[in-house]
Length: 64
Image (cartoon, rainbow, N blue to C red; front, side, top):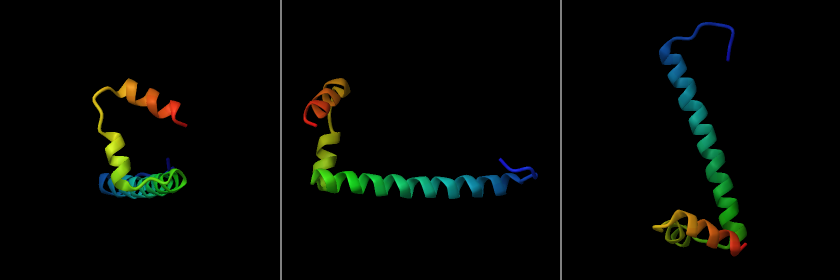
């Protein structure tokens, strides 16, 4: 990624920073989607509990 040597500690710190950045972006996108669909966190969590993933995805896609 860079043209200079980095210690393991520096690499770990960089990875953690990148992970925090992408987590924040993901959370922002999730909040936007929830607002657009008018969902609360409780409703979203209820939708995430299922036994058959394939059937759940089919239902979610058909309701869009």
